[in-house]
Image (cartoon, rainbow, N blue to C red):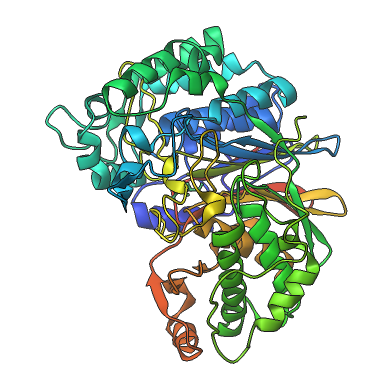
Length: 563
Ligand code: DON
């Protein structure tokens, strides 16, 4: 692993008391950035073995499912945005689907919503899509056999890996919920019921066996074979509705990325059922009407304008966004004219109330197409041939539903909570939604995951995305603003202080690093400011001085590696 640009490595050393991997690294032949150094190394190994950026991304995803399993894994979902060396653009949708038996009243008890049931246990689980996505990407765009990448990740699972502080703190925070499920408890808690600590070695024998079964028999093992059958049986015995037939019905969707421009740079991002791409572009269209560069990226004026734009986009999200196969999502949301209209509503001298969603042009007849048939983690990869990948994968909140199907080691997601379980009832991230994101059989819950590529004159210059629920949209947006308006390299673009407003609740969350003076000025403008120690976790690959550069979020323990 390259050890240049030591400043962040040194900072992490001070914080953790041990050498952390470098969050920023250069390379010419290929680049990988993830939240976990073992996963970054797996991506780099795939590149060095002759794989391309897609193989590297698959290796990262499979290894993250082992070493960062509280965030993502085979039991969850993912979105992947790709720009291939031939210039083609792809959006692979491996989002979970609602079981066929799911209805809008699934989480209502006598008419009262019970979010606990959409967050923990059997009913919280949607049909996992990550594996279908990875298999599709491997078959169509990869160069190495996926079985080889599965085998490499299986070795990490069976040999074990040392838990980092972040993983240990998630385990500690979730230990009571984990203890409710025997197969989960047996893996993630010690025999005396206490969680494993930072530095402890976590061995996942069942997970290794599952990866090896997949390497031997392919995704059928998961979607139509033993895993689907065992899950069906467990669900029946534990009050769930997810069935083997739901697994058999699952398909990855191949979508056109959503595209926009910002001051002449091209944005390629994830379309519905992600809200990420639509709202990153919507906010950029609003902000294009202001000279942000003149304000500087840490001024109260900058934070104020961006916040006002975020508010309006998130109000639209709550009303308009959902799975486009079930709800019409107007394309007018990303039109320049609508951006101008919303920009005109913004006052520079004070925060304005936003009562609800806007009405984008052609709200009813031009909608995003569905399938054109042809706590989360983001990672980015690129190679010298010009293949660029942005991928965000998730079980949703830490350890997802907390359910491990016995004998498999595979943790299942709780992405049913990303539906609006009733209009106006907030989900785990405080997000509200409407009919467009109501539960329906086979429907995909709305997401904020925003794997995004930034291009200039048709050439990729940044692959970026984040974890952190709705703050994903804000983090991705800020990385783009810092790249385009402030000319920052990826490491700096991720390091800059973050802030986030999601319309409801009417609160502006800011990182303390913004400083007391700026925070006081924002309060004086009328914002209700909530100060956070840190917001989110973003990873990026970009270009600096003509070479690839990777950046892991300096707030975390991730790493970038290139060669
Ligand atoms: O798809 C979404 O928007 C959420 N389920 C993402 C969850 C997340 O980022 C949790 N991570 N910290």
